Amino acid sequence: MTFPSFSVGEVLRAQDMNAVGLWQVASTSFTSSPGVEVQNCFTSDYRNYKVLINVFGNNSHNLQLQLMTGTNTKDNAATYDRWGFFWNAGINNFNMVNDTQQFVVNYFNAAANYSTADLTIFQPNVANVNTITNQHSWSGDSGLATWLDHSKRSNSAFTGLYIFPGSLGAQRITGNITVYGMRNS
Amino acid sequence: MSTEPLFIHVYDCLTGETTEREMTLEEVAEREALIPNAPDVPDPE
Image (cartoon, rainbow over all chains, first blue to last red):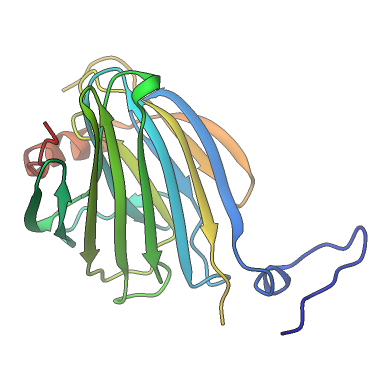
């Protein structure tokens, strides 16, 4: 293969970075927030995206996700399905369909027990073909559990994502989220 | 429904700017409406 070369001071464009691999399109940290929007992170510049999340809350709860269109229009349609399994002492299967939000990960209430999520979102900016795979861990008070899940279906070309606690009330989240575009090929 | 102002953390990739935006009443209502549909998540305990 031929590796790309760049000049000092050269402005690298999307097509330049596509020759390299992952390109960080967003990274932001949030504190005690009722929700986090990452706007305009999905474009035609990259086809598939990696989303990494570290999170904990003021209370233990579930982190949810919705994709967005336009600037920040949430996808409230029942387009989120979920199949997968999680394991701790054993292996457990689950399936949930027609949800209006995507479960991301359980989280605990202390920074020392932050949870992690590693999502791959396939072609979010292309209508009708969106797929999310999710591998995440919950480091609660009894150790670590890991899930693998899969979500599929969409009608829209999405432009961003929204993560939030599963209950509004007094639930707040702290952590960081980073979004990477993967090279087109 | 929550009565205190709620501020969403916003990161815009176009501008690279981070802002805090108060949730509108419509957004709060949308979020409240989602709660009954929250998946019953398996607890690792």
